Image (cartoon, rainbow, N blue to C red):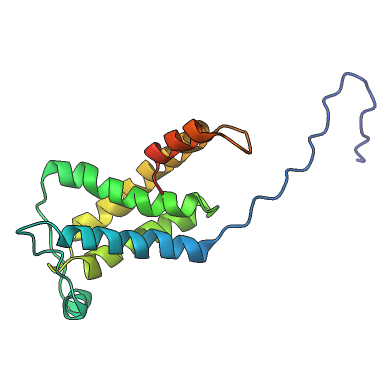
Length: 171
């Protein structure tokens, strides 16, 4: 059967075609998320006194790359807050640059893997990889949406909205 468009005055309007999404910048998201975030966290960790797990090098990277993974008995606070928050940094860096959810999740997993193999000198931990990737993706999406709400619909949200969004999701 042929569908005939309704000409009645009370019929709902036909929605206009949605504007195209802004182009994403996956290369910048890759650099800003996994690479720069890990570099800054590693350099910050090296400044901590009596902490040698951040003294990673090319040799420890190669050892971690080919060595066995372990279970890291971090504290509850580290496993349930620090690892998800670190993962959310990778994730929100990508999402804020227009990268889609699934690609951002993949970048989060890559960032976690890179941290476990190159960011620390100790052997990589499978539970840290899983927690940082999975919980970081979920927590990151929540923070991304909250920061988007804080910015509002305006093209120029103003200083306080920008500041609030930055506090919610720094990257």
